[in-house]
Length: 120
Image 1 (spheres, rainbow, N blue to C red):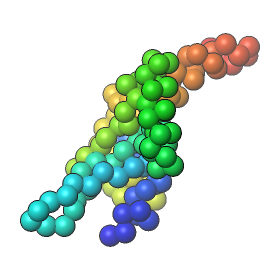
Image 2: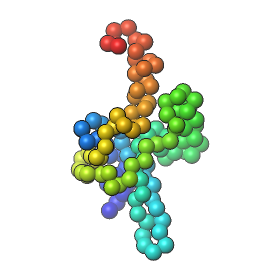
Image 3: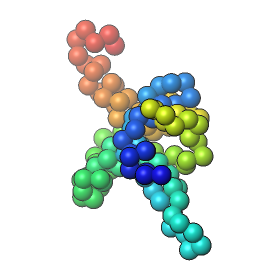
């Protein structure tokens, strides 16, 4: 399986069909007795930033912590939570119980809420 083509940047949806973001990183586990295996799929701005530059990734983590968005770490999902792989990757979890939507929630509370006529 070509992991980059099959998984990276694919849309991820939770069990209810809510879009959670895209696969921003893939963590492999190296094994002595066999080929590497996928340990986690990463979802989050810091994982995406790490793809461009480790320094940028650390900066995104620090920014998220400073603003109180999250602990800065990407959401790590084991491949066992993957229930369907097609155009979208469906997971057997609820995005409301994860940190996947942390940035969206922060923007809604801190920025969108203050815009007149935003409906808040």
